[in-house]
Image (cartoon, rainbow, N blue to C red; front, side, top):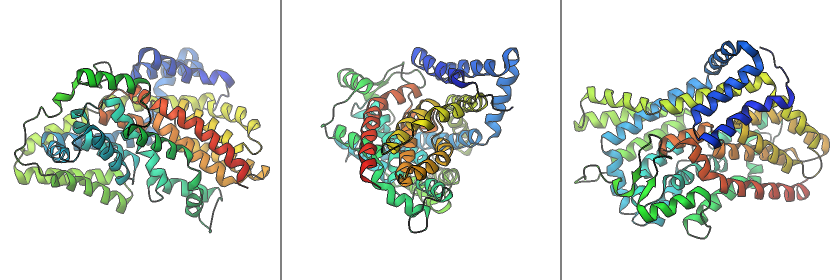
Length: 460
């Protein structure tokens, strides 16, 4: 179906989605309504056919299938580490070092830096390793989710050997933005302008050491956790069950806590990711390792391993369904011409020394409301770079504004893959995962606009 160019009307499905998200706090309902509204705009009374067609297109595009398979693999890995007791053994062993609330948060923060290869891997590994430990110290899941997600994409963009750096290096090369003849050289040269990830990580660190105050839902949940021991309410919990700090070690106490089995799994997944550049293959390798250890130790029968593996897959079904509907909305927005409309409104405003600041402000807002962090960069880069050149503005500064905008979207877009994966690992609903990060992201957003404004007058 051809693009329709509906103008402002093209924004209606996305607006409906956010209205329902904030009103009902139900992601599946919100996306269902939004996609149905979009289907009506496109097809009128034939909207059921349009809706099914867009859902099938979202699956066929590959991204949805990739995420579903990857989440299923992560679900299997997390479940096996849980039922085998290896996660608990690691948590008990780590608990000797994370013996205070602040140390638990600092170790969570540090682990985010150590697993820098990929943001999905980061979200899953850190969540699995530190969840029980942080529960024990009455750190609410919304705050824990912020700590985990804050050290995922923001860390990846700051280390030039990650999946994020590889993607943007290739994009810069394609746009002919190079330093020393390469896109990677341009990316490294532009790293001092990665204001948003630096600001968000700084806020996170200052919260941990007690200098920066908690805000919004993390403040409310923190007070509740300290007073009652409830680290996740029924409303916030992914499965509707209230979680208490004293349930963190409710599993059978281990007589000998050996962290090597859990660490061997994590080392396997990081190593294979670095070698193959494929997180999915790495996760499969980690599953093989943990199953091998389970069988060697006779922890579980093979039939039990398979049963728990399917339970792990099932635990991700809600997230899978939400991702499918989120990508269906993306397909609907393509057909209604929402992206073209945003670009039409945006382009006349892109001028002068504040060019990079405007790029970040608008593209950041775009990915917050419409998602597609890397997709958004691919959409806007062919527009931003030529305009920068025509205005005599350094295109590298504007390109790094796109990286910052994508990082903002990764940490905040309620239906984004990063928020979805983190919420699944942390076991809270995506809405609350987003809400826990939003106040700090908003501060980072404002300060980043100021940063790019100042840089625009300095960098030529």
